[in-house]
Length: 170
Image 1: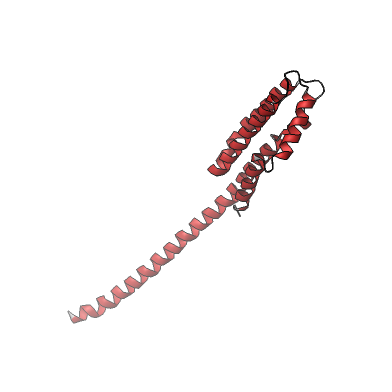
Image 2: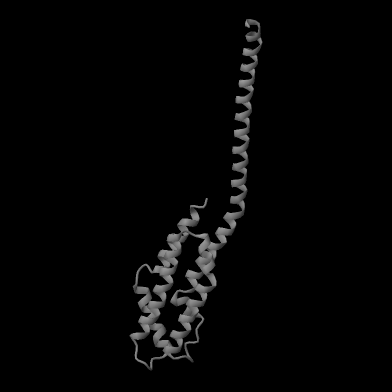
């Protein structure tokens, strides 16, 4: 019996040591593979997410009243026609970029939606302040004056959140 223990005990110790070493090596290999997968995922997803941030930045810039007015025919339109054109432009820009919400947080997307809604409300509110027969030029002047007096606009606030979140990707 003592003779068997002389052989079994060292064998068990060697077996236990080998098992511990192998299990540790397998765990480290698994962690290394997971790290590599995460690294490769980041290499793919970060550029895609950044393009989403870029698109939303363009959206926020394109739906500002001054940007929309740059492309409008202020001479040949009435204020009502200009209002309708501006509302349609904002809605089309937003609809074109709605899929970008998958790349940003819920808070940033909510800020983008609020910015869009505030621009729509601003366009309608300015139009209500003018007489029915107002020209597009009068309407544009009123909007530019009112927009510059607003301080930080919802577009600027959403853009600030968007930039901050994009910086946090790194």
